Length: 122
Image (cartoon, rainbow, N blue to C red; front, side):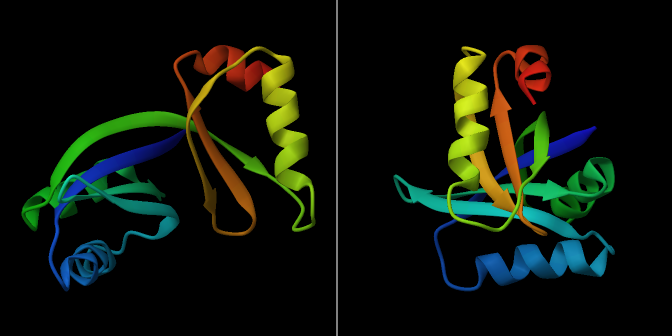
């Protein structure tokens, strides 16, 4: 079961390095990552190999984990149109995504309110 962690970050230089060091120091591999700034706060989504250990390492380092949720990870070919194929399959199942980003090894990470319907589409 793949897990996505949502982490709120201070908007300051070096904060992403601190997050990476906290996870790396705990032996946690980041398998996918998406980050953006919203209203003066950094928001990071992380796909990690061990959500429980990642949450513990982050919280011990002072980071606020806002959410932990199950996501679907889809292997895709690294070629033009791959995202369209996956997204069309999801749309054909009438599923609305609320999260999507690229993971390592050409994998797409997706989340939706109806995870069972999303899983069936994949």
